[in-house]
Image 1 (cartoon, rainbow, N blue to C red):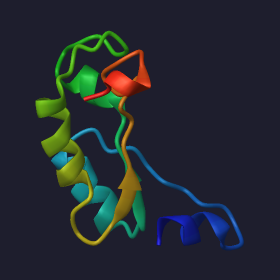
Image 2: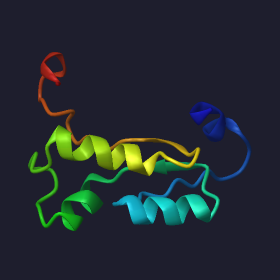
Image 3: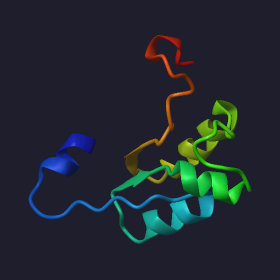
Image 4: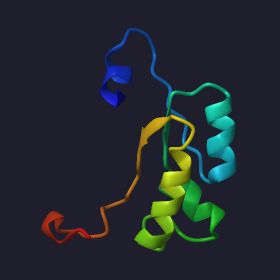
Length: 89
């Protein structure tokens, strides 16, 4: 389904909720897909983005909440928690 959203005619807009409230708002507004935002989540938690300041344990439930209500999406995982792809957790 996610690929089909990209392949259909017209502009595909996918907003970046930073918490459960904004995810629900965007879903209620009719967006078919939502993305996570490492910057938005870091700012909401009062942390620096891009410094691995958000653990996987913190990111996972936030991303899952953002995908409820039938929306599909993607996740911004910075560097996948490792500089070497073979070591990503």
